[in-house]
Image 1 (tube, rainbow, N blue to C red):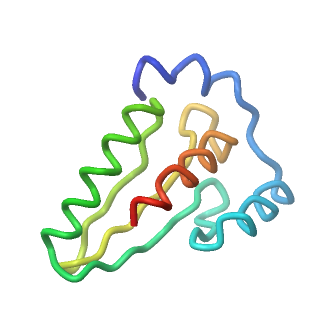
Image 2: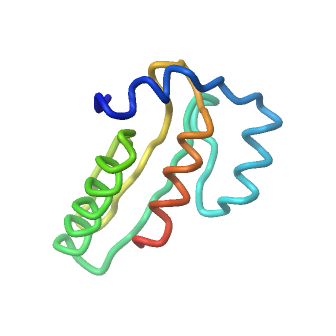
Length: 105
């Protein structure tokens, strides 16, 4: 966790299942992970496109002080997983970051 975001994230409450479902409806490209995370899978034309996207994600994540788990797989796919690990589940910070990442695709 980035030091700038630590205090803010530690003060956030874990969202209920109903709150998670409501927010997922607002962020249609994200799906519920294991109940404590949300995931988005994105395909690109090529490997350099996937890596360039990951670099853009890194910039936004640093600004937010909240960092997704990032997996580059295949030769052109990126999977983003968001969860507030310090809280043991999903918080508003996860959906705020999802909203900031969506326009980068």
